[in-house]
Image 1: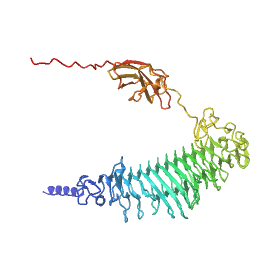
Image 2 (image 1 turned 30 degrees about the horizontal axis):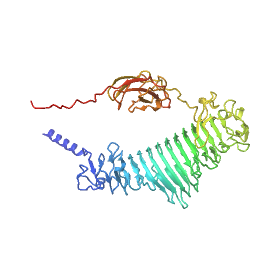
Image 3 (image 1 turned 180 degrees about the horizontal axis):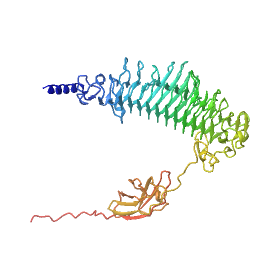
Image 4 (image 1 turned 90 degrees about the horizontal axis):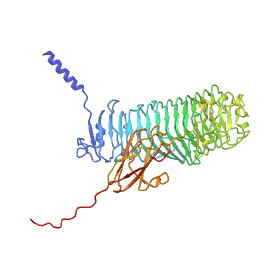
Length: 632
């Protein structure tokens, strides 16, 4: 009996401890709090009621329509049991809600580890916020559309994701400090380990009074965040204060990769301005394969280390493979270190600017342990590159760069200006459109010619010559070196100078098909068969087939005038069997068929062997009508 009692008590305790199974709710715009939520029809609940009921693990499905409530759960999920709101990811316009708000419900933190996927937000989305030092955690907002984004949203969160969302009609008109995407610390808790991927932000800056800083992305004490494949479309109509599209303040270990910044600078900001306001000891950040383009007359530069309340020399920052095309820059230049650099790396970047130099170091400061290699610096200013303000250059090197100016240099405006201590023997190439070699490099205040040895580069390691860019005009600038460029030489690191070596052109066309046959035919169709050829001759895989037919013999001259046969297969690997049917033909008719093969570089093969095939005769004569029908 005691054993029986123990077993019963154990079963009861397990039953009490076992969590309730996750619930699934359906909601509709006309749903009722009294409904069960079992389906999207008569039993759908209201969104407001479900917000108050959901707990970890629950799922909420939406009927199409417009809701008067936000998505704002009043509970938290967990890392292994999220709260999920499902709209229509492939058609976000099918469900409209007033807001998506995780992390804060007005008095405390709610909505951690929650998901919203596939919605349109009718107003300004609040996003993921914090309160009382508690950040939103583990949230996910994906495939949403915010057509009237207004003044922006909060993303003060940890371990959260914002993916494939489109923010339209954003605007900054406030006279106070403004952040469209607010990741600023407010309660000594850092925004960290978040991912913003594949999003588009469209924002107009139009302030008409004295104001504080304007930031599209404000990052204050943030770290370990990833920004990948986002597009920032920003128009500056008017800005009377400071303007930093990306402001990084004491932020570190963040990664920006494959993002696009499109800035229409219709006016020059009234205060300090730079695309990346990189200040107050921000360090260990990575910028890879981003594209930054500015248009319009307003001045703005990229900017690196800036003044601030703390040591502001940049540390261990990596910038690789980026393209900066800046239409109008101040005299400080396109990329500039305002207060020095320490152990940074700039490599394989393309910097093309109008106005000032392509890269400068302003206000002195240390320039130690920094590597500038394989970059292309292009400017319509006689001085392309200057580190003249550096007070300490220990361990810094310039390696295999291209410096190109559309304006002739002279004794007061050398193409490259550097202080003593820079490792000049690995300077790379100094190219210019005009001027003289004797004014190419100003080393420690004295002009000299590249390739003369000593302070001005060893012979063969630096030279004065035309780079032979693929396109050297600013509007369509392409820094890829053409074959025969003096920038292609084994004496340079990696065998070339600048951000891009010679283009590898695919000039080998696919082989011609010689195996075209017609295994069968009917009165209105012919089947074709052949063996695939390659991308380069008989090697690799081609891109497409062009199959044509005619009632007259086909040759290379009249092939393009023959009828194109739809439905050609995708080329297989070289030697693979391929087939197709050509339909819609006339009976008892001789047709000629031929194929041209193309690769992804646009190379076309010679004409295939010519196939002649006659369609079958179709009996179109009906039996005669019976005219002698009579009873027996």
